[in-house]
Amino acid sequence: MKSPLQAMRDLLAEDKRFKLEAYQFIREALQYSHENSPTDESYGPSDSRHVTGQQLSESCRLYAIDQYGYLAKMVLGSWGIRSTSDFGDLVYNLIRIEQMRKSDTDRREDFDEVYSFDDAFEPEFELVTKDED
Image (cartoon, rainbow, N blue to C red):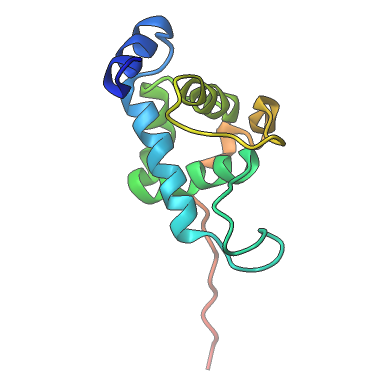
């Protein structure tokens, strides 16, 4: 049986699309998702540690903005991440080398086209008007 380190080295040699930082980012974004998940019923049971592909994609977006601000899209791109489908490829590569797990209902396609990278990392400005006295 391969060590986790050797499995990751082999994965990086086999699939050259993504840098090691991309895999580290996915794991950190999953942790971010667990730490920041809402407790309402629309998200699922609060004691559940399961995160869907769509939820992880959104957590990746929020975590990237939190960590890299306006540079988020550029930083992710430098690691080979250019779409939510890439998040899915990263996750399923990690599942294949037994560094992540999936449920019976999870599918690789759950990550496809969750949002557009062209818009997802743009700053949102709110126009505030000053009340006149």
